[in-house]
Amino acid sequence: VRPHLSQGGRRPRRVVRRLRQGARALRQERPGGYPTLPLPLPYPTPTLPQVAALLGEVLYETNDVAQALDLLESRVDVLERVTIPVAVLRVLTVLSASHWLNGRQMEAMAYLERLQDYAQHLDLDRLLMLSLGEQVHRHLQRGEFDVAKRKLQDMDRIEERHVGAPDETRHVISLVRQRAQIRWSLAMGDADGAAERLEHLIPLCEARGRQLTVVRLRLQSAIVNRQLGRHDRKRADV
Image (cartoon, rainbow, N blue to C red; front, side):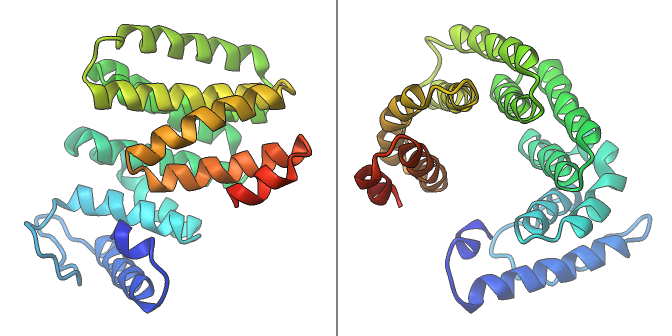
């Protein structure tokens, strides 16, 4: 699904249309049975909770926030108990972001804290870092700088635990920490510090093929360089 959505043209729209049909089927599910999803899958059929998590994420990414909430919120307890951690991550972050867009900031923060509790209970530091990174972002948006700073310090302690971790795990944890620090720098008015970190981080993500992250970082870099009056660099980033 993700590769199709990252391309232009009619195929992504066709995939999304089938996923929306799947969402309607999920809402019509009956106890003791599973709906037949209109998705031609070339691999083993995923579990119903995994399908629900993916559908919710796609609905959110295609700006159908209300349907994403409708699909996921009534199932979140079951999804958290029975599905894999990456699906739980998707569900809780989509629910948080959806509530945030609807102006319900307390509900949004509650889902991020729930993700933190889930990750701590299962000792999943990558998920824990993702939760803390998003909490830093939201607390900065709310002007809660002291809370954001404490969350950054929590992230520092987790990163220190993974100095000798496998390369990919260490990279993900460092990436999330660096992005949180960039947001902190911008909130503190340190555009030069943010620009320096972005200049270092973008090629690292390019080398690992993290294309979506690179796009987001380049856009952020363009905004920072515009603030600094570096118009040549801004054009290079966009």
